[in-house]
Image (cartoon, rainbow, N blue to C red; front, side, top):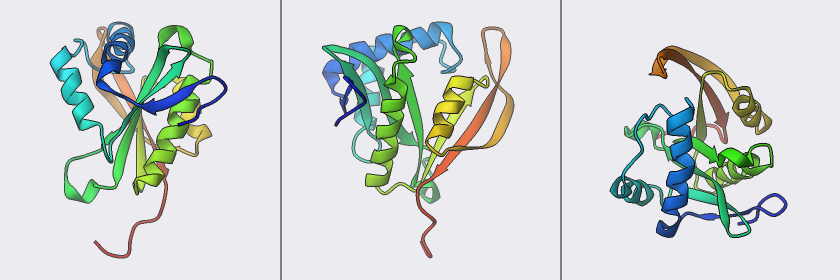
Length: 174
């Protein structure tokens, strides 16, 4: 997969899990970008990767020989009626912000969602993070709502804004 400038995008592998986990750990400890407050174990990361193949891929962004970010398309909801709706997640290494990594990852996730036949991509953005909101909007996502005070982290309630990108209209039938 090609990316912006010197960013290589490729599907994640088990060898990438330590770097993926390290990037995520920063957000667990310092951000409401995830509501997790404990880092996943190695076994949990392996199960996570096994769940992120086929129609729900995990990708990494590589610069040189360093993984600088990762992203996924995940199931929005396990019920059958939601089978063509996915949620995107994008995490960029803390010292690599504003270098096009998030843009490259989200752009590729949108392409993959189209290729895989998904219809809707949902982005959940906690705490009204302007950079994440602008990134999603730049790809055509629109804000469709806000879940107020649904998260609680770092001693405070946190809103989650919901963004949606419709890739294709619904089919005529089931």
